[in-house]
Amino acid sequence: MSYDDLRVKVGRRPVTVVELDLDFCANIYGVAPCTAVVGVSSGQKCFNTYSSCQDTANYAKTTKTYRFTSQSSFLPIGETVFPCITSVDLAPVQIDPKGFSVSGSVTVELQDFPHHDRGIDSYAVERAYIPDQRGTFFGKLRGRNPYIENRVMRVKEGYIDADRTIYSRTRTYFIDRMEGPDANGKVRIIGKDALRFADSSKSKAPLVSKGSLSADIAAVATSLTLVPAGVGAEYPSSGTVRIDDEVIKYSGKSTDILTGLTRASDGTAADTHDAGSKVQLCIRYTAATIPTILNDLLVNYANLDAAYIPLADWIDESNTWIGSITSTVLLTEPTGVNDLLKEIQESTGSYLWWDDIDAEIKFKVLVPPLPSDLPPLLNEREHFIAGSVTVKDLPNERVSQVLMYFAPTGAVVELKPENFRSVSIQVDATGEGVNAYGTSNARTILNRWVTSLPLADEIGLRVLNRYKETPRQVSFRLDAKDASLKTGDLVDISSRLIQGVDGGPRLIRCLVTESREVQMGSQYEYTVMQAANTAGSAALIAPDGTPDWLDATDEQRLTYMFISNDAGFMSDFTVAPHIT
Image (cartoon, rainbow, N blue to C red; front, side, top):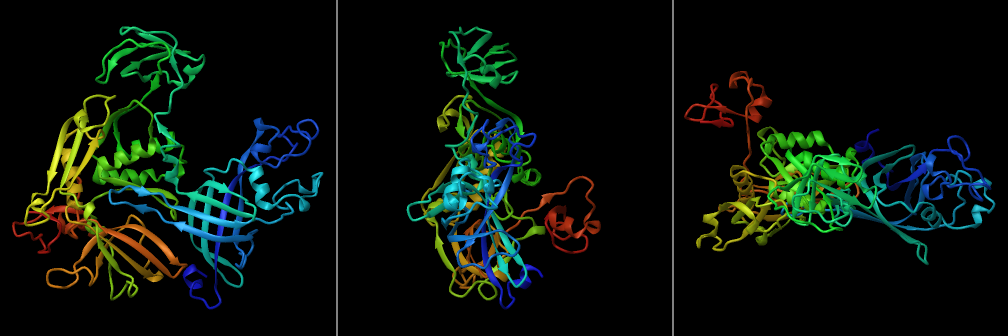
């Protein structure tokens, strides 16, 4: 039986299960490779957690899954589940008008309870104390697992019938913190999405370097020595460093000595530097693609597991829409990874967000869809739940000018307009006219990731075309049968609340900025924002080897541009994406 069958079956019972994947040692106490011995290593056996480990050299990290459901819920069949949840509050991911995502989160409230430790503590029957008479479940769980931050938590929703549990969807988060138990036994576990790893307070790129100069160096010095002793191990065999406002390349390293210095690199000036000055290791990207840079920042500096990044999909999206953009950038001072991600997204007309159901970070460029992948059309007669549609204008998000500053004057300058060599300006003169909006609303983008005027013009024009008409925000609800939309999708909206000049519904194309389940398995609420002033589409220039129109496949006809006659007709008199 499928989920779709079960959700309409008489007698089905909804269930929500929260899972925590906490660290657990795969070894058996005192059995090789574990060398711990009671009375020698400690007065009692460990609890198979790192904080209680008595032989950390042989600690074998795996995970143990703890499952919880509501106090009044039927228990899933065949699973060990603790019925102690009092509430689950989901705050969905949101995409703001500039394309940046606001992290999704989940807050689970639970009631603590006495517990005998059987099934939790591998050595419960061997303890000198009686587990039934000591402590509570969450009190002991927290005491044995102090390192729960960033561990995986899942919220699973589904139904139970007489003999099975079928989950409709699973949402993945990462534990931010655990609060309690308090005096009333209340416990709160808060989870956030994967982009929490990039929070500026948690991750920097480049990492803060610990080395500093052991002695003064002159403006012509060709080597330098780092202190404290041994810190040279944190520097690669060659690279780039920043000391005060000078960038220096080095070609060799001998323990704590950097050699082969190239002074006054990257538009800076050679200078003397005092003993104790920080020697900051830099990050250099040379002709790097946007997916490569984003992946490097998230994996190597935010410490996000690469399994959550569908890099192949990112590369396909980039190759299709921004493949001509490569970046040569030097990052000379530690900056919050999240700040860098936002900077790159704004500079390239792209956005990132966490898909909690697919459990991966999505990457998308702000462009119209291809004819082969047009968005669905939703309307009141067939889709929207009666009375659920609301519409409001977002005047502050209208853009009539895009000022794209690019090519900074040096690698260590502050990112301010006056410190860039060039600027691309895109203007909606009609919209600014007295017969239209009559006001100017400029968006300034400081872009060190794009180096050419044509690319800056292209990105600025995309931004202007998307926002030059005051965008509308639409909210509506759908039944489960229509609720296939996800955050980040495009959708065409037709509603009597959005009328054209003739009073009929005006079709607008929108971006789904938020989606939430309001009645489990049956009703969903969406917030969308107008994504363009027309409902047009895009097509690609066909690669070499693509057949002529008559011999092309349906997919090729819907994806690529073709040469037509002067009237816009193809050789079989059809009209398609074409170049006249």
